[in-house]
Length: 230
Length: 230
DNA sequence: CATCCCATAAAACAAGCGTTCAGTGTTAAA
DNA sequence: TTTAACACTGAACGCTTGTTTTATGGGATG
Image (tube, rainbow over all chains, first blue to last red; front, side):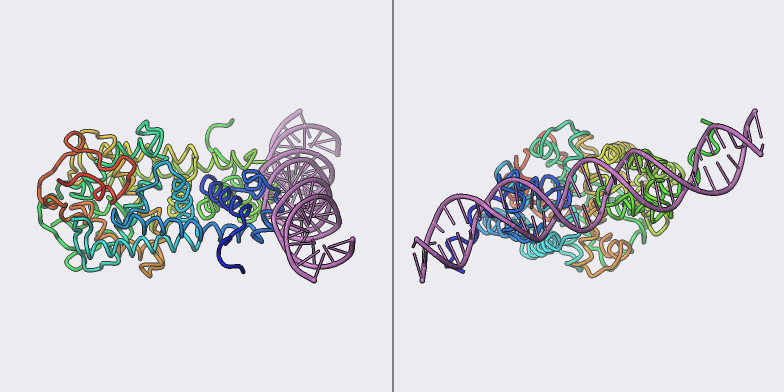
């Protein structure tokens, strides 16, 4: 183990980069070692030679992407703590985003780490606000930040499906069209009135105690339709 | 082609049911024909004999699940048009939900069909309301319903990841804990105040015209942090 | 009874996978 | 110069995959 000048030999880094892109595009099991080797311009054997196995290669990619993103987050700390999701425009960071989304949806340890980290970050934002914005504070802060985390990640997860119904062709196009309405929901919700009263008013009914869980088996916008409502 | 008494031979139906469950659990490429055959109690060759190929088997499953769900939706039309997501408690319908979620995330045609269908249903609910609930109406109705569809599907997509940070063990447990806060967001949003003013008030700022898309490349709660705000 | 059909099983097949192995050439210390 | 270490290739191995082929046995039909 030398100093730290070459944490990874140059070729190994090229293989790892190719692997990140390939995994981001096709998922882990959907990507073959041979594809990665070809993309990196090396032989399949060399991939194993440097990383031991496909699984260990994936572990290296996991660590690399996670570190790259947290580093970027540190640098842009003044812009937004939720920034992880923001700067995925066109740069090389874009495949890192796709990579994380893929691991978010398969049962990988790294995906769980990322989600947990995201929830914690959101919890902090709820407590302290950010850049002049303040968020409502609920009793069960963990559940609240978890719920918001899910809603915040949804657009990235489902953007590919959105293109068909919106006629957009890339992330940028879809988001330009959607953001006004996402922002509207984040600020005011989308339910205007419930059977017994109004919703849009300033009545911040903090849930958690006087709230009955609307539907034991329910899930979504269905929630309002099943119970509650005086 | 006989009348319609036996649209599918009994054994083929058993294979298809086993395939739906297996695909729902492990995804399409993560499930082998041999696994399906074993689960159905038949030989691998018979699976191909009845369906032609793994891909055609998948197509059969797609059609079957979609029809089963729309049929169920028709029967429960009086409960909620978004019901698709609600009755996935423990019954046999549960694997249909997982099946659809899986196809929602891989580039399958059926997943797209389902998403589009969901968006259309939501568009109608926005127009007509449901069971006494009314939703805000925005100019770009399609974009609005698409945005809401994404947010509504997120909890099901990410529920497995939620278990770790919430300590829950199944969909029911997670949702019981989350629904109050999801409902809160659906009704009032989660942003309490923006740098220049308030958000929780009844000021329904319908976006689309006087709204500037907060961030061209942005996506999420980041949106508020990048632009806008006087 | 003979014959065809078809559901079914068992085995074999070709392709692709991750991985291993036996080298080759270069580099650098001894 | 010899030796050892290293990055690297190309072929091959063993295994799993989806699929095909061959064979069997029961039901209907002639």
